[in-house]
Image (cartoon, rainbow, N blue to C red):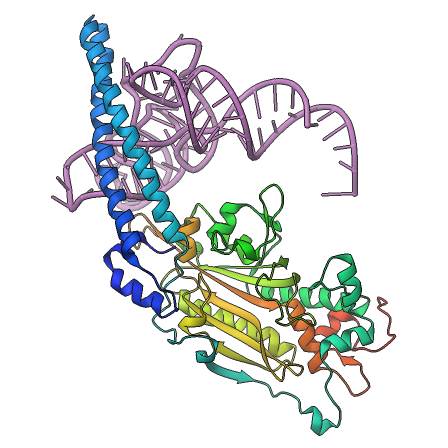
Length: 434
RNA sequence: GGAGAGGUCGCCUAGUCCGGCCGAGGGCGCAUGAUUGGAAAUCAUGUAUACCGCAAGGUAUCGAGGGUUCGAAUCCCUCCCUCUCCGCCA
């Protein structure tokens, strides 16, 4: 959520900034609601002050035996109350209108974010690794949705039987590979100073609102009958851990990580990435979240990207780093880097991590502040950051495709071997523990 | 799920039966000052948040929401949460 006061005082700039994200924002409704809200508050509070004075006098009048005067005062207060009641009703609707407006306005892109209309205007920052030339190696690369079933480690058909389309079932070394990746990622981040958490997978509406998933993106979420939502990412839980809290500046920045399954409705993505593990309703992810001061948050973002890159490098997967342009930025983000891994089946790089600085946008929604008595009086909103480190399903797809061998087996990257207990996955190879 | 007890200012606690002088007392903690060579101890003062307002100041908040009343931390209702016991269960 943006700062209403800032929006009021910088309407043109905000409008322009949102335009750069292709959001056509008409400030009239906001300005009217904001103006009306403040006027109503002023009026209503003046009346409340009068009411208090009048009301307090009644006790004294009663004691003094001046019953008639007391009754007159009561009548006066009743009249004031009627007036307050109608003002408050108007105030409620003004505030509702204002909240409705503010809750669906996306964050303002950071000054450093490249301006652009959409995906095509994103800026490539750097590449790491070289995609294999399968033609030169003399065989044709298979997509992971062929490799997995062929090795007996992914079963898409039975997943559909058990749930519905866009679910996966892993078997044997496939299931172990999933666990190995999770443990490898979580361990690696822990060693680099991220505190690991284990969180609820269902969150209430307040929590989902804090990160910006509600109210605007409800159709992307699975919902339970008692009003809880399955988390679409651990970012929701990690960020809201400190909702309604005032953090001590001395403890900042906080570096958190968590492995969780993630659940997404994928409404509106019909026909996209229909095959394989790329776009499914349920996938695993190890997530990083940071809480930082405004002074350090952008440097923290660079470090977070490096932490995500470290995973890809250790897994020997070629990737590139993309900086999202204003038009492609997510709702809560002020600046975002995507990591895209090379996928032979797409003959292209495909998003595997997204690292964002949300500045104070989520902190304002969730009320996450910090205190630094040496630097300023009172409290300030923290900056929140989040990044995938990494999406596990897509990582598995990338390993299967990039590490496939002529004989149909898949070589396990060295860093993962201790977690897998085997050096490759071959057809008929059983997932026995050694 | 059943029965009972509770949720007050960072923490502990008073106030709730008998509604106004209660945004709310005390202790601890914390901050500043005095004292001291320095510290401890002691003493003094201060010590929530948000919103409206140029300001003075005002308004709201005693788990949340609603009700009664001129007036609610205090009375009534609903909900949430915590604790104890019982039941059930990985």
